[in-house]
Length: 335
Image 1 (cartoon, rainbow, N blue to C red):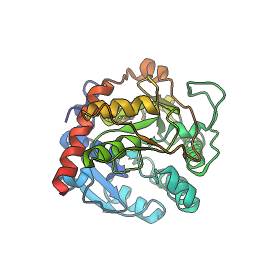
Image 2: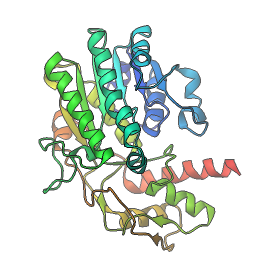
Image 3: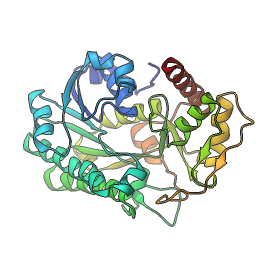
């Protein structure tokens, strides 16, 4: 693996007992792999199994302890923490798809909101077993703001179901930190891309798949929406850097933004994706049909730079080429 973590990260995590919720997701797969390869006693909390998940394809699933359960079920998460005597948790488990949240807000609220308070309440009950909890959140938690970029002092202001689920996740995390002293921090990032993302409605995997199939790629928006894009290696290093500070009382309840601070329009990232695939001349089918989407959003990462010493290190061109290789291997193998 090529994840560049903070100095001495391997030594830090090597003696920890770590639970990763959402371990079969894109970020969860790479984070779980890094922890297992670094010697940590690693527990993967998984609801559904996908044979295409990087957790499965890489063989990481055979190197970690697996707990099958659902975040909506308090007993499942308490059992995972207690039976494995977990001291560190990366809470990545969530329903992550905006469209799915619009179609079924109840499921999204149960997974993202109830799932978070179940986990944090289990940690409160089992205190002082758990020393550090890192909650993976999103720029969506800020909702629509009048000023860009988003900074950590802005309010949690989600409007639509997915945004609200992330706003609530962050507020609940802060509540547990301030009321019970729960050692929890919050990581917020924009659009994460990289090998292992199997949500084909997202622009990076969806465009690569279309190009590899010889099909015309589709853009759901009008191409002018602005986002930041962060390679999965950089967000794994961000979670690790934040985790190494989370047991310090002064960090409890704090949120940190993670971004490469180079926002792009959808059309700009689309052109970069096509270039990485060697197809720079392909024009997309622009649907202009995006709904429940904030038009422009991107993050300021000054706090992460100054407090954690974290910086994004994967250039967009390199990250997209690495991602294309992953998808080409996946989709070629399936034929």
